[in-house]
Length: 604
Image (tube, rainbow, N blue to C red):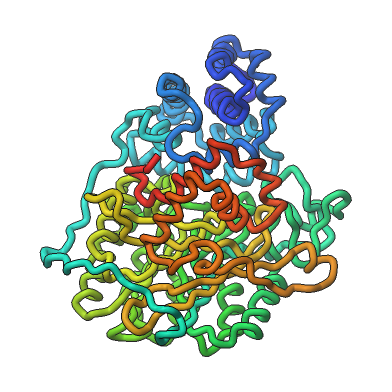
């Protein structure tokens, strides 16, 4: 057994082998698996495994795993089965250690030593991340008799076979669905409209330091502790690197919007506010980021209602938001829910649904009673990285049943609804059962839900919702706005929608704006320019679900249109260069993402 890691070392070894095989096709996956087993049996790292470690690019592997179109990437079913079986074997040994009474701090130290020895991250990242994650993992294992198959299914996907996600259903109203009539969107000049600003993922870094190192070996850079930059230096407003933005960039962004878009009627802030240095997280630090960022926004838009949704970086540790049924003294989330309860209702004047922010950081409000209802939902309850869902994934905190009831109320009142959330329901971060139930709700209330707004991916993209019975018919749209942060290699962005207020309350058009960060840093020019208009440049038609479906189908054969979409998707030459060319596999993945809103039924 590898001495530095005790029984945990084989798990890390096999994980590295699998990740290296995923990211580096030239490596022989089965040989890597055998090398990991040999390392476990002999106590010495096998040379072929060591080669994988030497070639390891953690950031690239994260990119591969995060952008997979579903399940374990690249491997055949036979390879997936081998990975699941090997994972279960090694994780079973780790669980035996935990359940046999080995002190948690010893296991934590083993994990830190493995992370350091295998150079997965610098020591401060290894220790900080593991220290933050360990208490809740230990409590979860103590509260649920967990097997290796359970953990491997959670980490790698349903192919590993454990039934950790029980089936469940939202009870939809017995009232019949009204006959559907496809909406016909008028020209913006032919109807009454309002303007909605969507700002997403500012991720303000309160420790950002201009002049610091922007190209470092940490997952996030541009901090004073890293020292001055040489080849890569943090500019005054950000860096085209693995860095978030300083508060001054958010200030300049809001100032520009105030000066150049005086007709903003509503603002949707779709998460995330804290920065990406997750190994440094504290509850107090996250509360400060949330409060300062939202107070800054309200200060610039004192008379404009601002509606927010929670992101996955708000909890401490990241992603970990326990359902109401799992709350304990250790994982109590009231510190965060109380923060939102204090701040969110002060940013708009309409009444908020009673008790829901405290129960699960979601809410409903009616800024224009009888016409428009805004519903903000907590997408951490679908987040596959939220391990508290292993204890209770059945409609966590009753959110989706509540959502269905709210939509029925809106339908009965003749109101249209705008849904706000953070994680789009069609990406692989969203659990299939939750995603499918959400799609059932969208299908039933397609004529009530006028628009959906998301963030999280930091890219400029969309998802089309399809009829669950007629898979060719588009029934809804998810607008996924680009990020206001630069993480990673991005130009800061925001989006403005022109919305019909006469009948449909749908978007008639939207414009996406970006800051040229290079110019901002070199010339102190923090202006924004129009990247594109959806109606004129991307769709060449009104932004209806049907027209977005036609765009998806067109991109499957029209390379020029797909390339145009990818230019908007990255909105930064640096981000495109970092990602590399988008070949046939990439193209299939991106198109699959655009037409998949239900992770239980990926359309690829």
